[in-house]
Amino acid sequence: MHSDRRVAPAAVLLFEPCHSLVQEHGSFASGTDRQRRLSFASPHWRRLARLWAALDAVHRLNKAGRSCTQRELFYRAISDCQELFACQSIMDKALRDAVGALQISRPHLGIFTAEKGLLAGDVTFQDPTCYVSRAAQGASGTSIGEAMLEDDKCIQVSEKAKWVLVVEKDTVFQHLLHSGLLQRHPLILITGRGYPDILTRRFLQKLQRIAPRLPQLYLGDFDPDGVAIYLLYLTSCPQLKWLGLHSTDLPQLNAATATPLRRRDAALKASLLRREELQRRPRIAEEVEAMKMKFKLEALHAGDGDQSHMALTFIPQKIQNSSWI
Image (cartoon, rainbow, N blue to C red; front, side, top):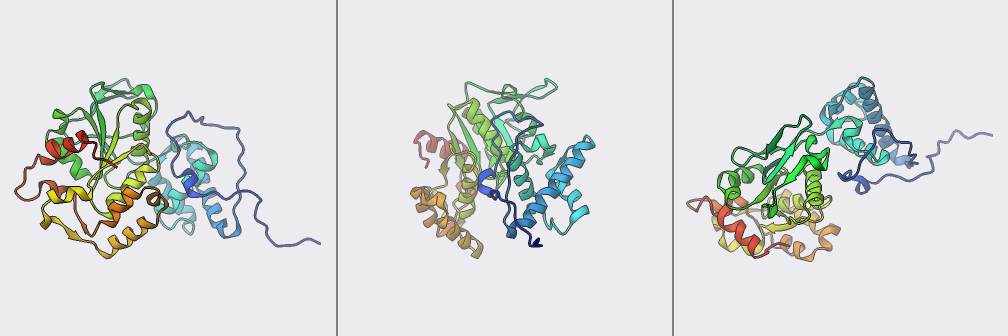
């Protein structure tokens, strides 16, 4: 007698932390003969359907000899199965399942992320057409693109460079560019413009591999979002140190620039303190506990203060004194 009861395949359920980012290091073939058994318990069958729908959309693009961005793939998918993909983030999770299951990177699936991060400083790169350029120092920065990640030989880091500075947001990146930081101090300046994208994190991975002598430092606001952004970088760039803002920096800031924590900030702060990453890093947890008010990096040059103070005094002194966590 046969039963009509459906039974889930006997394998292992994919979990997000296992492949939240495909490692930049390593050569992935466009084809593979590896087999990987996947298992989805019944509550996760919808996730399985999304995985196959995403792979089907990728397959049809590849047959047509095309590639696309994650955003375009989302719009292609909802035209066929809107009930599976209510928003872009759901498609992004399905793609993470796909690259985690197949163990190949997004570019080898023909899927690219939009360029978000910016770069400036003592680094040159060579694109596939053999055009060599130096990362911008005085304009608005150079976009971090897929071409920079293709081959280690396409990136050359100057021997003069002493460190890598990752800043939280574009406004601070632009301020440092135009305040003469790069003219006074040999460094590589990077921003993910808020919560960083995969390309920015992969570029930091590449820099760590080809120039391990350079310390990588993060500078962000003294608020829960600043710490959350730093922790996101750490998931793929564990070598990154937190340069500030720290609670010890607050006395030199204009107290009038402080703003109270909103309900969302308080909820994020509580969530951060429950995270395992902070429980393993008590010094960062202490900084989060101390966040009774919010201070933005712009407070370093607010009002009538020296507009070059952040670039020419604050950052160099912090680095000289090794004032990072």
